[in-house]
Image 1 (tube, one colour):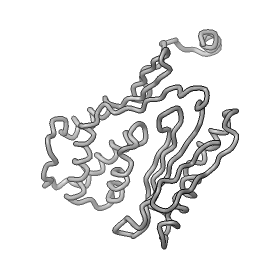
Image 2 (cartoon, rainbow, N blue to C red; image 1 turned 90 degrees about the vertical axis):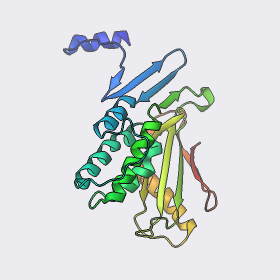
Image 3 (cartoon, rainbow, N blue to C red; image 1 turned 30 degrees about the vertical axis):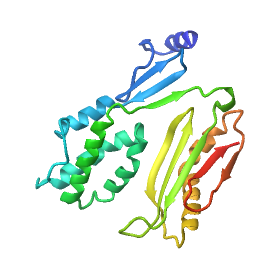
Length: 231
């Protein structure tokens, strides 16, 4: 690494600031002896809570602010960065809040505040990566599930998936399915196909590892989680 950095600094103007500790406002903590790494957004989460006066929150407040629309969009926009970087646990709640960006009401803003309360309680939650060992190294796995006809407004099913590499998530999403389904089994198959389309970049990425040449899919019966495993 030292030789590579020296070669780069010979060709380009720059400085060697040592190991990376922060990336786009996200803290990076590594332990080379333990072969672990952590992405932490506690600082950004704290700033979001302080901006919206929720740092000392105890319960969800009653919302009577006339500027509901503007405040609601700001909260959802700030939460978006947390969801897409280090917080897969917020994906479903974020998906629900995002549906009402056009015409949010007091109930929607109250739900957004409630999610900020949850963020306060899970402030130091991190994504922790590690070396799982020779047998499981560079194995990309995915889990996908669907909730049949669960969206009460459209009666569409909801898909949720999670991709894992080196012991921690690398991609995740919760969204409504594009069309209607007539059974739980159909919703499960749609969820699997939707996941493969949305996350095909990770399957392409996975094939770059020499010990990850192919994929197999195990589809369990309706109502159970479907696991996409590398073989």
